[in-house]
Image (cartoon, rainbow, N blue to C red; front, side, top):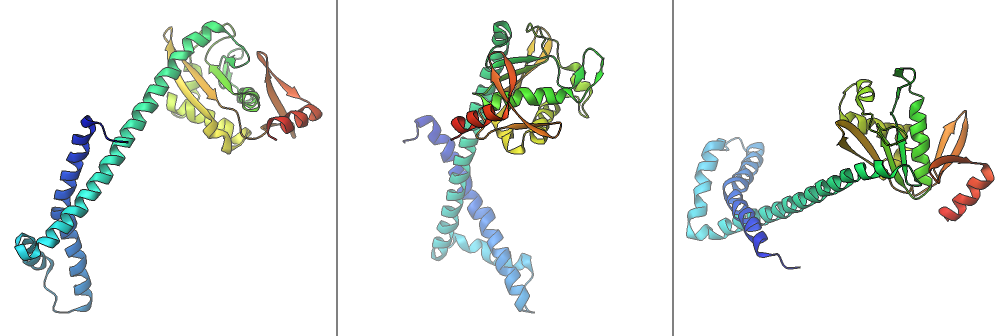
Length: 264
């Protein structure tokens, strides 16, 4: 695919800079390596400064033009490669930023729609609103919901809202973390998945945040899992599945039949 005109100056600048670097940086560095090899095996090797001074200016002579061209070309290739990498990185970063903005914009709409087969509301991650204290057992409730989404068709778990979709915020949860910020909240969600459901499932969740009515709301976007997901409860492996607007446990026969159809 041909590069559009506005991209050519971008890459051309990297090629030019790379060519300059090839002559002014790569060439001297190569001479340093040569001098070091000579110094290792010769007691009469000149000092480094004299060695570089005697050889660097030789690239200006016509008979050494091939050396100058070689280092210029090498630098240009390196510059072009770095330019392509930088351009692709910028494209990926922009696409990722746009995707996060689109996902974040979904949160207010999902709150209005209410809970359904692909949407679940949770008031908190680990803060017990009734007892007004940290309750780590609530993390199992989060894990159960995520397991149900993993085993079904994926979904959206919104944390920091009540059953009616009214924002409650994340302040209480954040206060229980070592670093009371949203990045730490996201890491905690990943830790819950890793410890209770399996670390291989972390790539299948993505957490975004939105400010709704002055309160932070988290949305965990869950993709369907590539395998059956079980949650350990009372020394037993329980298979949860999202059904309607709730998450239910399947008995052994139901779980086996569903898994055989789902991941056959």
